[in-house]
Image (tube, rainbow, N blue to C red):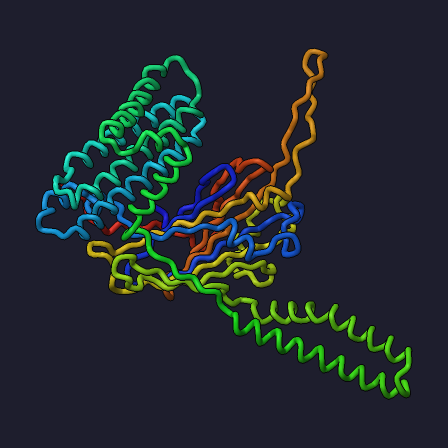
Length: 473
C-alpha cells in the first residue's frame, strides 16, 4: 500500500489517508493547481473559511490486521479484565468494523460495471454476515459488560443495513441478478428483525427518522471513545497579528501626524480650508490603514503555520502527536524545484496559468504512551471541492454530427482539470512526490488519475506492513 492514498470520497470530495508510526516525523504538502479560468483565487476564496468549512480530518489508532481489534480472544478472557478494558477493546472492533464497511460501500457505489458491482456486492454482504456472527458469538452475560455490547451491536446492525440499502437504492437494475438482490434484501430484513427481537429501539424511535438517526449518531460517538484521538487545536500568530495591527496603526498615524503638522503650517488659524484638509487626511487614513495592515500581515504570515494541533488518547489523556497546519495561496516562484520539474512534464495543452492553493501538515508522533498493542495511527482528511464548483460554468455547448444526411447534436459539459502534487518528507530523508489529475465539472468529480513523474524525481513509495498475521480465535 502507498504511504499516502488519494481517492474520491463523495461526488465532490476527495480524501487522503496515511499512517504514521511511533516516533515518526512527517511533513506532507498538497499543492492544488487551479486553472485561472476557474476563477478561484485569494480574492474569491478565503483560505481560512475554506479550511473550517470544507476540510475535515479524523485521526485514530490503526491496525492493518484483525489481531488487534479481534474481540473473540478478548471476550474469552473477559474475567481477567476490567469493564474499562472490555469497553475499549469492544470499541476498537466496532469502530474498525464500521469504517471498513463505510469505505467498501463507498467504493462499491462508484463501480459502473454491472457485473463487477454485483460480484462485489455479494462479497460485501457475505463479509458483513460473517463479522456480525463472529461478533455476537461472544456476547457477554454480565450486565455490566452487556450494556456496552448492546450499544455496539445495535449500531453495527443498523449501520450495515443502511449501507446495504443505500447501495441497493442506486444499484443498476438487471433481472439476472434478482436472486442476489433478494438475498441482500433478506439480510437487511433479518437485521431489522434482530434489533426488534432484542428491543434495542423503542417504537417511537423507530417511527421517527430523526430520532433513530440521532440515536445512532450518539452510539457512533460512544464506540469512538478510546479509538479516535482527541484533538486540541489552537490558532497560531494571534499575538503577532495584534502586534502587526499596532505597527500598521503607528505607521499610518506617523504619516497622518506629519501631514497635519504640515497642513497647520500652511494654513494660518482655523479656517474652512484647514478643516477640509484635515477631513481628507483622516479619510485617507481610514482607507489605507486596513490595506497596510493586511499587506504587512501577509508578509509576516508567509510560510508560517496557521494552526497547531495536539492529539491525545481519550482514555489516558496522554499526548500522542503534535501537528502544525498550513493553508494559503502561494506563488509559483515559491514552489520546490522538484514540483517545477514535475509540472514541465505536462502536455502543452495543459500548461495553463493557475492559482496554487497549498495545504501542509507537519506531524511529530510521540515515542511512547500509545494504547497497548498499537504502534500506528491513521489520519484521514477530506477535501470538499463544492466551494470550487460554485465558480464553474455549466456546459452550454453542443457538438453536431451528420449521418446519412441527418444532423444530430449532443450536449457537452464543461470540464476542468486540477493538478494535485503531493510532497512527502519523512524525518531528514529527501522528499518524495506524486502527481494526480482531478477532472471535475460543476456537479461531480469525473475522474482522478495518477500521472507518471519525470526521471530524477523520487515517487512516493509503498508502506511496508510490519505487523504480523492475525491469530485465530
